[in-house]
Length: 100
Length: 176
Image (cartoon, rainbow over all chains, first blue to last red; front, side):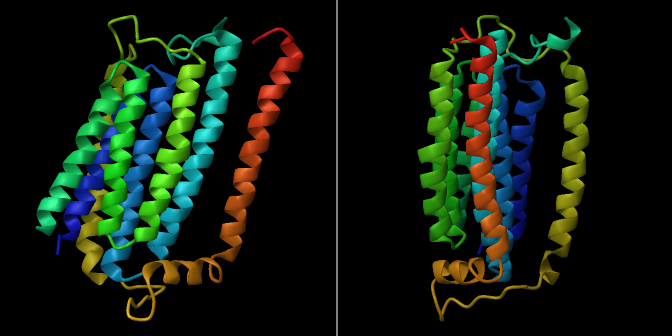
């Protein structure tokens, strides 16, 4: 039996990796990919809690999270495509549309 | 043996995650995330849910990442030409990252301290049915409203994507 702390540490590590991508990358697509990594970290946490307490709730939350991640990827990629059509750029620090 | 499998899966998730976040080429990043997601599907399998492992592979590897790859190819992203891959003001980002890491570490330490007192809310028993049976049982009774809500959400996403992309074409006329 693997201790529960290991899963928590793995969650923390993966979440921070995703956070690095969100905070430091310029490319909007890689930013969305980092959001997916963060969401995957949360899935591990919910599934491990569910596994250790013999509870179905966590698995169901993971199921909903997968559906939510698909929806989020759809909306995010739509916005990236719109932005690319309008400005021809996908780099976050070059998009300064409102400052003229 | 369990621990070895877990360590392999953890390494197989963290290293591709880092490589995906740090890679210059978006196509490579998406493919590294694919490696991460396949390892995560196995991790979900070791956590006792074969159904979620299958859903993870079908939805993520089959749909979401293909969507990402499709968009990367569609808008024809080349490699980052400039040497600088990261944003300019990264010192503020580093501060925020350290703050969040500290915050998460504290809250997760709290969670592990609390974990012996966890009590099951919707208890399940593997001798009466498989994991999939229990998930289906609670999903279609206890969580039926939320399930329908997720369906409506996905419908809204599809309609929103179609609407947004159509609108701009009418306004600008000749773009794309």
